[in-house]
Amino acid sequence: MSPSPRDLRLLMLAPTSRDGGITSELLRGAGIEVDTCATLEDLTQSLNDGAAAVMIGEEHLAGGMKAPLAAWLARQPPWSDLPILILTRPGADSPESAEAWRTLGNVTLIERPTRVTTLLSAVQTAIRARARQYQIRGHLSERHRTEQQLRAADRRKDEFLATLGHELRNPLAPILNSLEILKLSGAFEDARTAPACAVMARQVHHLNRLVDDLLEVSRITRGIIEVKKEPLDLAAIVKAAIETSRPVLDNLRHEIHVDVAPEQLCVGGDPVRLTQVFANLLNNAAKYTNHGGIITITTRRDGGDAMVSVRDNGIGIAPNLLSQVFDMFMQVDRSTRRSQGGLGIGLTLVRSLVSMHGGTVEARSDGPGLGSEFIVRLPLLVEPARTTESVRPIAPLPSKRILIVDDSRDGGESLAMLLRVLGAEVALAHSGRDALACVAAFRPDVVLLDIGMPGMDGYEVARRIRANRDNRHISLIALTGWGQDEDRQRSSAAGFDHHLVKPADIEQLRQLLTVA
Image 1 (tube, rainbow, N blue to C red):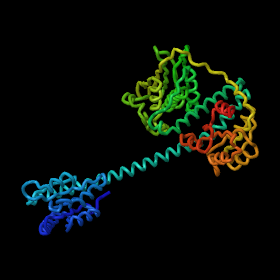
Image 2 (image 1 turned 90 degrees about the vertical axis):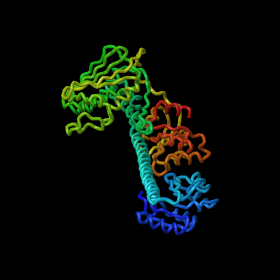
Image 3 (image 1 turned 120 degrees about the horizontal axis):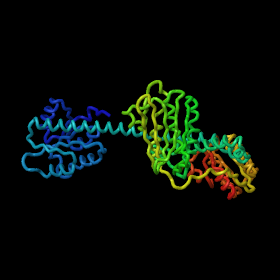
Image 4 (image 1 turned 90 degrees about the horizontal axis):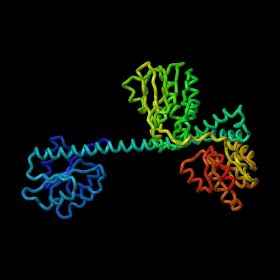
């Protein structure tokens, strides 16, 4: 924000009109814009139109005469510190000047008679200082605008991620419901279908965890990712990582060699996060290895640590880059041949997650064209890892009348099918208005109600249900893709008893339906 010419003028209230005329002529001759004022009130009023500095004779500050000027100065914005040049009488310090110096802030005392060079120097210094204040104000205003724009962009990002999370949860819910139906039908026990069902269940839960992280915007931007540790068999984690990376490996026709330690290596960790670590290392190896390469993953005991090595025969890493490969956005080769390299955050995430597990990761390479190796070390646990639990059937529901309200037909119908298999009597509605009509006709014990529906949303449906005294017995459960704290607060205020986020854990839902 540049100052106007009026912002860089000198306002002067001289001791006498003769002094004012002489001084004005002198200053204008030096290229300084000067406006003379007849009274202190005139000067104070002129300040509202802008000024670089004020020059005033001390005679005009005697007694309470300086009050209007002091009041104006007290109202200055934080960036402003108006220079005040006071022309004092010759000789001893006067009480007027001393009082003004103490109370008016940015004061310079100039004794009369004044040498021309001294006067010009004092005025020019004051104007330059004032111009600097205007410059700083411009920088502050620009920074304020930039901060506002960044905050607005951050809000839009949060809103986008929340909406994206909601949209991702909607298809996840019917997939998980369908898997539960397969589980109840015995598909998880059938030798022909059990492996495929297990892979689908594992990947759906994996994706659900990633969606959870996506929505924790503030935690992710601060680098805070929750790790849920449990005893794990490292071989099972490596196997899951290979399954996760299989599409990338197969697409590039890489050969994967797996050399797992003969003994069980048990580590304490989050299965999703450690799977993510080794899948990222495999993806990184695949990306920097020519088509048809060889990638080897090995597990071994190394003293009190479990060691996992991911080695490739790819393009290798120059010695001067080994210390940088874990840096954010770092990519070893940015040539067109490696244009599929992604954002360069995979190895940074690996280092962060391994550190959160109390481990270390290092990169090795003999140089360009000689492949590379990434070695992860994790502390071993004494206790054995949990064995894979056999699939336990979900207990049937007590006799309940349940109304499902969801504008997603796949989501609503798959959940209705699952609850019917569990023994519930189920009705289904796909809009808010249909839901109210079903409540009156079906008389449900429980309503599983989506929130983000077009037209009448779930909040409004809940409020209308609660407004009818005949519906006091109904248990309202929000089943929605919206899972932020403010969403839970809004659902509680609208009359919901519980708030579940899609895809709901079926055992948690069964427990709520049992006690409802």
